[in-house]
Length: 485
Length: 95
Image (cartoon, rainbow over all chains, first blue to last red):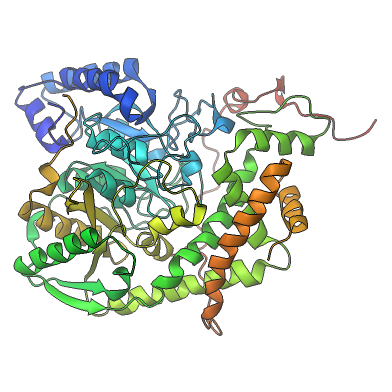
């Protein structure tokens, strides 16, 4: 029963074929057995999960479930605040921090009856593409334990792929949902900026961060998005637009849909197996009746550089709050406040977080602000214009999620080579657009490959519908890594 | 090229104590990353308006009414050091 997606699971609850408690117990048992090797979780909330499952049982017995997510056992990335449950961002500086409130997404899923199994591992403060930068332990890819699950939301992605949760939530500032979804062979969706409230998400790059679902299939992703999306008075950047029924429009197909293939997403140095799989996926879409057109997104070459100015700049400002005063770690023995903060931050942050803080502080500092930050914000406009132009001709863009499959632990020692992993993912963040990754095949070594659909702002129904049509026509999403069950 | 002095200056601004070995590694890595970022200079951005948020929103207002908020004790609960209703820090003002 740890194989079924949410929509089948809650259907089975309604038929009384099984119960939320029985399923939650199966997941907890599987976590106890396998997570030592996977490292998907930082905290397992066993008691809380069993309590929530028992309450869900009672609702089904009474014939009054809360909806299609009632009793679904989920994993939340440890960057999302959970009331009474330690939230660390996989950082020593927040070790022991127990939030006094729930993130809006957590509160909404709880209100929908979801069962939290625990908190997912991640790169420290969501900075990384491999989950090797977790201060506590790395996460391993369930398809090959020698490889990374991607990042920064590698814990939840690996947990969903390994059957240690039926679905979950990650966050995507520059690919951190889509890239691990691609590496782990599952579905990952980054919504339009503002579609989902960021309240209670520990901030990294505030103009880029979005929370989104990890799922076994597109239907589950649509269900989860429907539960977390919508205006929130606690996040002034959340959008007022009404939340459509994302499941209702899934099966409309792609017949007559105009899809754009950007030349710039097929670059020299990309893995030929990835290119082959994506081109084959394009053929499948054509076979389903979609019209394929070449489009050009000329600023793609500069998108990653733009990201590595804007995201660190915002991070350096956001992470100024970790000063040893209000929560988390404090270094002992300092003689004044500045020394206390500087030593606390030296001891509490890992190397990548320090790098980004330094980079961000540098590009914002006097004399460099205009040359770096000011210019990057203008290039951001050019990236947006590229998409605007393309969306004048096509309804969706289809592209690879990543240039390569999952790499080995320790393979990317140089920070820049790690950053280049997200070259196809960051443009959607820079432009604030919705984008999904769905499995589109496997390498000869059996490693998953991801296909990305990028839509216009608020066109989650469009990206979900195309992803669903592709998924239903192909067998990839049904494959599971061979771990003992 | 970014100098050692510039790295030290930025570290002070960022309230980040760097060890001697961290300092040189950081300098070299920042240098490589900034060299990559320099490709932004290839683009002509004359007369291009900056984008600070992908989805523009301005002045989101709410009614000026008191709503329940985090109780003081809960807000202080995670503090590494507190006295009564205050966060305690090393002395910042001389006697």
